[in-house]
Image 1 (cartoon, rainbow, N blue to C red):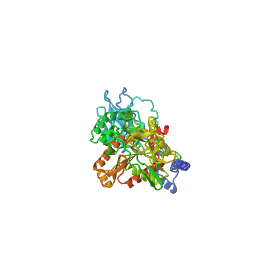
Image 2 (cartoon, helix red, strand yellow; image 1 turned 120 degrees about the horizontal axis):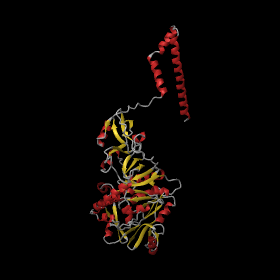
Image 3 (spheres, rainbow, N blue to C red; image 1 turned 90 degrees about the horizontal axis):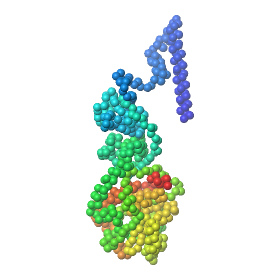
Image 4 (cartoon, helix red, strand yellow; image 1 turned 180 degrees about the vertical axis):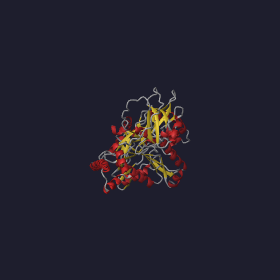
Length: 550
């Protein structure tokens, strides 16, 4: 600022010196013309009388008077004394829209300014207000015109546009609304919305976009802009309440359609009647790291579903799921501070998509940084097993007591024995300053989305069925029977069910996913996942407001 001020003072001094010079210049010219002229005087008078010198003096006079304001057109001579007070407003039009909408009053037929978009040209001018009655545009009366005809006049106008308006009743000054940011949980296109009052004023956005809400004055249509967008003008978006009402009308139809799917697994998924399975229990030593039971999601294999009747149990609420209509979630910027616990990393995806392989590669890549939970079971410990390594072995009575006390994130029963993942096992990993990797059923996500865990949810989805057939042709699907495990190649039906399950998960829980990775190539998917988790630890993230206010 010191340098700028110095330059400003220098320029001010220069203009002052020029002003003094020009005053003396005029005086000198008059004196010279009043004296008997010799050759030198005549030559000086001739120079001072040249047009460019006179032009320079004229410019100086104009600048000195500071007459920069445009001249407004004169008021019409035929104004009735009884006519309401009017304002004559002139705005210079560029490529930017005016940033205001108009409507026709149903009772009086008057053309009224319906809305001023925050940050737009009209808003920045401070001259046009909601409720003003528009009388003329560029001298053309608009009393008998439709709003679309007036918009056409404005679109065809170039340069300065003159409005004649009758000021509306001035409301109290708008209160300063605090900045509010929301994460969009659905896609929106104003061009496809028949309810929006002005499609041109709408703001399109995608699921996951961060929106800054500029105004909630209208209970139906908020004004917002995309965070990080350089355009200062806000656009219209449906309000949370309005969109929830619309989704409530659409949702029964959507659920009915989904339940008509021929896949029995789909129908079970909708009703949260998942069967349970225990994938192959294994313990292998990789790079000196003991990995036990990487995935225990407690779903029965297809073969066992025919002979075992089991019910998957988890902390859940039918009413909670029904009431959760994804529209907007209020968020704020969050960045993990040094010394804070890591965010819980939740991996979600259909069976067979490769969650195990991705977890295993993460653990091998940095065993000091990534870790997994140790599950609980009520079955007896086998000879080669150690308590707290493969499992935490507890009695059936204690397991049932822990179920009643809601100590498990997920739990299930298999062949008379309980298996489950406890909250304490997650706490144990996080307390060691490690990133806890946990794959869960999607309906448990809502119960883990707390300020304590601040989970980052990654959805791993399969590629096309053609790519699955190509890349998984040598892969095996595990089927447990009795205490033995067998495997068989993936079938076309396996691939189709994997894709169908992924679509269902994304349709029903996609608004909770923060990252979607397509596992087309395991190495590429792993590198993408690892890079994403690195950014979670270093970059600023948008998280629910409740996580930072707790």
